[in-house]
Structures are given as structure tokens and as C-alpha cells.
Length: 324
Ligand code: GLU
Image 1: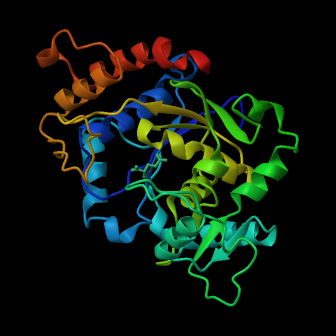
Image 2: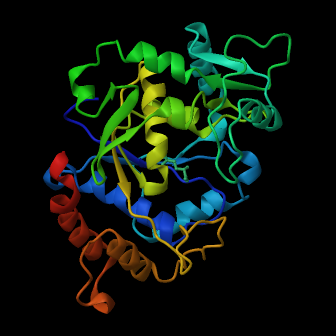
């Protein structure tokens, strides 16, 4: 990562149109790029994360881009689509396989449950437990279904490896825990080995896993700063490990506050969040700006979109850019 550049991105999954929650992440990543270096500004890209094709909704990506444009959030390059990038993800998987940091796995969900039960681990509803490592040392004649990252092996290897100084400021590995600093949440840590284990890179249905695709694309687009919703904060350690295993740079991370519905649940498309209404972009932006702690518009009816965005760019710097 070059100290003198900034490339940020907003990476929506087109499972539905933008809603009040996803607009917060979009606005935050746009403001962070535009406010960079005292307002000199960096580049801001949009990537359509349509790898999970069964969950994508036809036309949602185009609708998201139109919603962003109506809010004045226009990317500096044409958007990139993950569904066109299978060859690059395969190349990354091949690279990991070649250095034995990935392996094929024959286990179904049921096999994994059974292995946990056999080890005496109590079943907990809605809690995904780490992979028990059944195929870590070979398929024993079974057929490969998915491909996994060798987390345990890599953590042990990495704990001993020297980390470049600029990267050390962003993350480190100590006592088998990955430590990293989020620009908003501060110091974070995760024991990836015990909390997620050997995670999936390519799924049993042949689709690429989010973790691999996001790491390959953040590097391919030379992303220096990732700004996204806080629900993804606990994915960051997995992504940092993959970046290191693939010898890619680690960007800086900032996770934004989540918008919650009346029931306290995170607002999401799956949860039935209402799509943003294109006719009132300023109102939608003001709501998103509130969530980010940015000032309210004094005369909302007489403020142009451009003036509102400029006001928030200036307000962004002292709030979030101190660590840059
Ligand atoms: N595509 C992911 C989502 O919409 C976001 C990925 C990211 O920003 O890293 O939840």
C-alpha cells in the first residue's frame, strides 16, 4: 500500500436495492475517499459482489447504481462485477493449493455436525462451529465438495514470520490471535483458529466464497481503505489472513454503525428493509449522515445535494480521518 494514495470502494451484493442501512456504508466510503488528505480526495470505486448468484436479484445491481447516482455518489471507474472474475479466484485458489494452504474437503454440513457430536461438543442452534478438520490430512478416498483455507496451519506459520513494518501498524499475530485496529472501533482481536477454523474458499455448489473473492478483488483494485458495515468486522481477520497467505497488502479498515429496525435487528434486505426512495435522496442521505454522527442540515429544503455532501466531507475529517 502506498502511503500517498487512497483507493476506496463500496461493494454491495445485489440481493435487492439499497436500503437505509446499506446507504450508510455507501455514504461513509464515499465521504472517506473524498475527505482523504485534507479534502484532496482519493479514488472511489463500486464493485458489484454478485458471486452468490442464487441470492442475487435480477436488476438489483442497476437499481443500486441508479440509487447511488441519485444521491450524488458516482464511482470514478465503471463498476466491476465479481461474476466475471472466476478465473482470478481460481488462480488465487491454485496459489494457495500449491503452497498447501488450501485443501479439498468432502464434508457435508451433516458430516460436520456428526464430527462435533462425536467429539462431545453440544449442539447450539444458529451457531456455526469451526470446521473440525476432518479432511485436513486428505480425503481418504472421498470426493471433494468444497475447498478450505488451512487456517490453523497458516496461523502457526505466520506467528513466526516477520511482518512488514507498515503492515504491522494494521495487524499482528500474538498468542494465536489476530490483532487489528479498526479506525472507528479501535483495537480488535479474534482467535480465528477457534472461532472460525478452516473456512470455505469455494463452496460445495461451485460458487466462490465471499472471503476469497473480496480479498482477490480488493488487491486487484489496489484498495487501500475499506469502509463497510460493522456486521462485517468479524470477517476482517479471515481476510487479513488470506491477504497474507496470498502475499497481498492489507488495507486499513473502518466499520460503520449499523442501522437497526424497531425490533433491534440489523436492517437488511433479508429482514425486509424498505428500498430507498429515489425521489428524496437528500432526506435519505440526512438519515444516513445522522447514523454516522454527521451534522444535520440547517435548511434541508434549500440545500443542494452538492452543498450537503461538501458539508459532510468537511465534518468527516475531524470525526474519522484522524488516524490517516
Ligand atoms: N458484499 C458485501 C455486502 O453487501 C460487502 C462486502 C464488503 O464490503 O467487504 O454485505
